[in-house]
Amino acid sequence: MELSGTVRDTLASRWAHGCSWRPLISGIGPQLALIILLLSLPACRGTRSLDEGWKPSRPIDFTYEMGGKQTKLSRLRGRPLVLVLMRTSELPSQAYMKEVSQAFTKIAGVVRFLVLTIEQMEAPFVGPYAEAEQLPFPIGVAEPDVGNGLSPLGLIPTTPTTYLIDSKGRVYDAAAGLVKSDQLIEAIQHVDKR
Image (cartoon, rainbow, N blue to C red; front, side, top):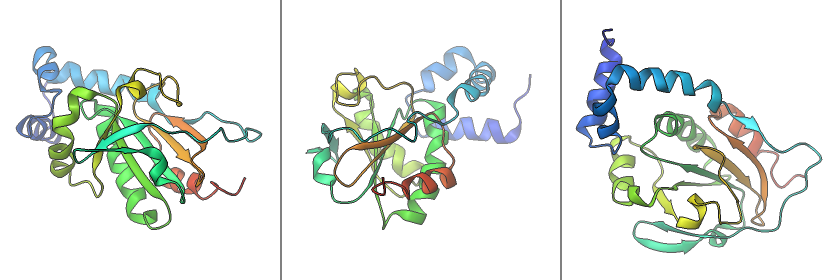
């Protein structure tokens, strides 16, 4: 099987930037990695996990690191928040950053965005990854409890997972997997109106 030029160039670009999934790809081969990605996409479609009658939770809080500084999620209260938990080493999370970037450029003044990896091992790579991908936002590192399912969010069903948090710090809605930017923009408009 021969990879198309676009796929081959994309993989070569990822390897050149030193992404942490390089050993995985080189160990199983790019063709198999592409097949795994394509097979995983249907399982990663964004699905709304909360029904219309659901009431927001109590305010949540946990610590994360951004640019070498520890801070609390509660410091971002006052405006709705789009919280994305991801892994920079996983292809679905990498693909999702394009959708998040599009939403960010359209509604960043209205809501806050926080993108965190849940893998502590990725801490040294998040800055270079965001720069290499030309993301319009930084990526931080969530405290270990978030990735281990011990935070107020509980177990993270998959990565990426997107949480919509209201201005009081309560989870309003959540979607596991990939969500299109227009769906994300539509959903965030309803936060704080319930």
